Image (cartoon, rainbow, N blue to C red):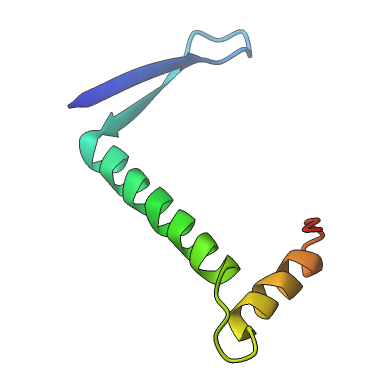
Length: 69
């Protein structure tokens, strides 16, 4: 499956940009989305030795100014 999209530039020219999205790109994106979701939940709910992974993720959220409470 191949999908093409055209985006017209608003600079007054008639040039356009072609973007080709293949089924392989969609499959890779879906796998990465699932892997990322799994990692977020695995780290968020991990309790392990003193909650090391959970605490590291918690500190990282604070470091990049993402509210978590």
